[in-house]
Image 1 (cartoon, rainbow, N blue to C red):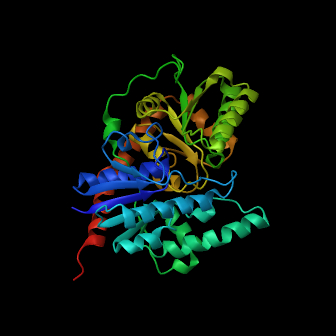
Image 2: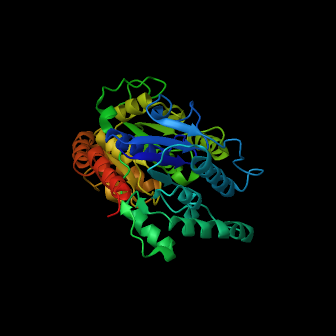
Image 3: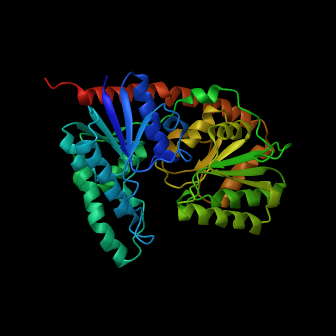
Length: 399
C-alpha cells in the first residue's frame, strides 16, 4: 500500500477536479491510502465522493484571499497552494509516500522538503490560460510564468491528459525538452453510467421533445458556449424542431460564472429561442445521468480543449457528439462514426445538427459505435492500471 496525498487548490466541481477525484478513486481501488489537502472545499459545491466520506479531505488556508480587489488571482492561488503545501509538510504529521500535485506547480519546492516523490499532473500550462493584453499584465505575469516552468521541472514525474497537451507542454516549456510527460487520459469510473437513469423531469426537458441537444460545460467564456446557442438558433430558423439544454458548472463566488450565465440567457432571448432552451446550473450526478440518457446528441463547444471528459461520458451513454475539431476531441471522437468534428462556427455545427433531424436513426447507429470506442480505448481499468504502475514505480525502493 502506498500512502498518496493529493494536493489541489480548490476541490469544487470542474474537469480538473473530476480528474483528480477519479485518480484518487482508482488508486484506492488498488488498496492504496489516499487523502486530499486543499485550500477550499465546500460540501455544497463539490463531487459526492469528497463529501460522503469516500475520500478524506483536509481543507486549510481558506482564510487567505482569492484576489486583491478582484485582481491578482493567479498570485493569490499560488500563495494559497504554497500555504497548503507548507501545512502538509511541516505541521500536519500526515504519513506520506507520494504526493500527487496538479494545476499549480509553485508549491513543489516546498513539497520537496518532505523527501518524498512528487508526481505532477499537467492539465494544461497555466501561462496559456490568461491573456496578456497590457504591459502591466505582462509585467505581472512574467515572474509567475518563470516560476511555473522552473517548478514544473522539479517534479519526479509529469503526467499530461492527452497527446495534444503533451505537444503543448514541449512547445511552452522550452527549458524542459529533456522531460517526456506520460499521457494518462483522465477516465472516470463508468459504473454509475450503467445504472438505470431516472426520466428527465419537465424542468430539465419539456415532455414530448424528441430531438434534444445537450451542452455540458462550466459557465466560462473560454468554453465557447454561445456557439451552441447560435447553432441551435440557425437550426430552429430552418427546421422549427428540437430543444437545447445548457447545463453548466456554476459558482456564485466566481464573477465570470454569474455574468456569462446572464449573457447566454440574453443571447437566447435575442435569437427568439424562448422556451426552446433550458438553462441549468450546478446539476447533480443524477440529473446529469438523466440528461445524457434523454438527449439525442451532445454539443461540445470548447476550442483547443485540453482533453474533455464529457464527450467520453456521452459516448459511454451511446450518445453521438458534435465537437470542435481541435485539441482533445481529435483523440476521442471518430469523425462521421461516433459524431462530427466541425470548425468552431455556428453554420458548421448547425449543419451537423441537421443530420440528426434528417435521419433520426443516426443517433442509435453512432451511439453504438461510440460505446464500443469507449470500451476499447478509454476504460477506467486501463486508466487505473497505468496510474498504479506509475505510482508503484515512483515509490519502489532504489536498488
